[in-house]
Length: 251
Ligand code: PGA
Image (tube, rainbow, N blue to C red; front, side, top):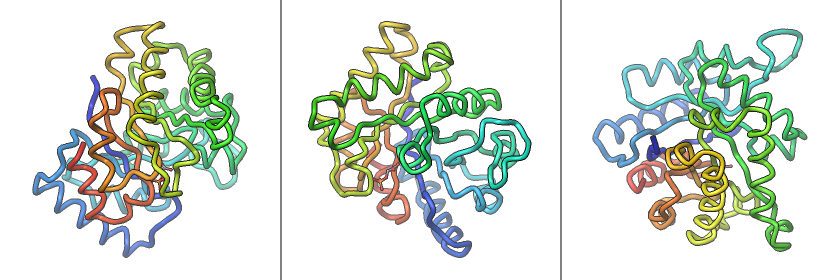
């Protein structure tokens, strides 16, 4: 089912005390019913997952992770396995974020391995796709996101998308303050959805699709008003409880 979903991607931000402060403000807001979003997910740095699990116990806010390694265990110094995320009550995991693709050279193949490994652990992958500024200027936005999506479908199969979320995140809009206009975002979301529909209409109709890239309190509503935008993946603005709750209220 399409769900209105707002996901906080804290990236590499926060200290123990800040995690507590931010979560307690968000919990108060959610408990008071400010969020129209059906689901709110917090993705902290992995090292804080235990703390977040404890502090969110009893709340309806879900927990996600930002990354994990596809192998179940082994000699992978510094890495964390998807099965470990499950032990901290994670239900979602971000896969193929552009910062992972660009800064850590993650290929479509590796992204696909992670997507499959996440699903094996019953985690819902939030698959990120998006084009660079140059690709957009060359008219390649749609081709790029479809190629990224197709790479996963080829290996994982279309059926695997009955339990996945897609996030369209144009790289030029991430952390830059340059949001895609609602029309630009909608156009790509519609392209992704109709591509899926050619393979499986039911999956296309039911998949939750998020927009990410400088989503803020003041632009969230216009983005969420678009027919194919079901929610947001929020970076910078998720570190400010008031800003984040306003986005959750708009979903
Ligand atoms: P931003 O990040 O909201 O800070 O642009 C979004 C993301 O990278 O998921």
